[in-house]
Figure 1 (tube, rainbow, N blue to C red):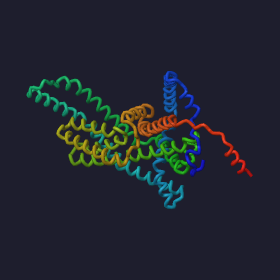
Figure 2: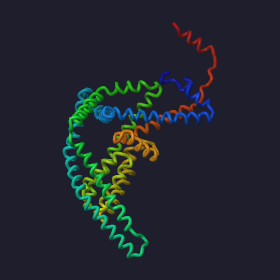
Figure 3: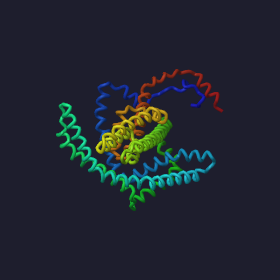
Figure 4: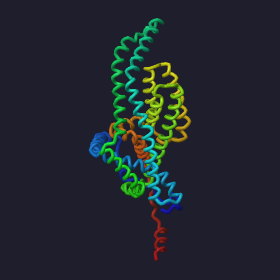
Length: 390
């Protein structure tokens, strides 16, 4: 059908699968759903096993694809300025590597040093927190409140101390492992850079081959939805997290929060994931409260105010309605992504959930299309077609 033709010139048809499904009774539909659910779960489990087996390769390819996707936008702008595709890919990739290396050289040693100092001082902070709870318990007893914190202090102090020290130690070890390059890590980095450069040059061909496996009528909507979801989500989360982390780092410094720069950077990194900023604020507030509750209270108030300003002022302008998902389903998607793919699964969980949602909406809209009108047999089209033949 030509673009100038009216929509009514071509009858709207539904697939045989939709017609077969609509012809079933509600009981038969429910039975099929119940029978298909275990198969779906089995397929998900099998996919997770396959992903675990090829994890290193898939992680490298996925990271390269995400980097190429994000770098394709500045590369397209350079191409519009007159650079060839290969030249633009080399320039964009070189600038990205230089920026990332400079950031790692300047920030990573500071984070490691601050993290080591924090782990050393945590026992003293816990002792300070225990003392503050004892003082609070004495005040409550003096005021005649029927609250006794002795049991809470004795039961939770040592256990909480061990748990948080363990978490801090694991986080510090993870940071050290990232900072220290081994032969395998160096090989993974080189492969990621090479794949990224290849995808920057030939990404459209690779993507066209993947999308070409889908039915023709959904290729364009699927490609547009995927591109828009990933672009808006990653760029939006990066901008919001950068604003949130930078503002908290400055405010924590003004409030003389101990390890304020480390805590601000940590909250900013966690804000790259939905709900991560809130979790980060709670964790750092509890840690500072162990040392001094008088610093933790204004710190928490400032963090909440900044978070509300970012979420109500910046996030709607940047993110818009990028997900369109209920927060409950966003939370479920993040947990599922973490279970299947770890940190990388968390990163791609929300855009993948958006794609699934859009696919379900498209299927529902396809089922709600009106039935195709019955064709009327006339002799005019045949005569016109015959007249048009040479």
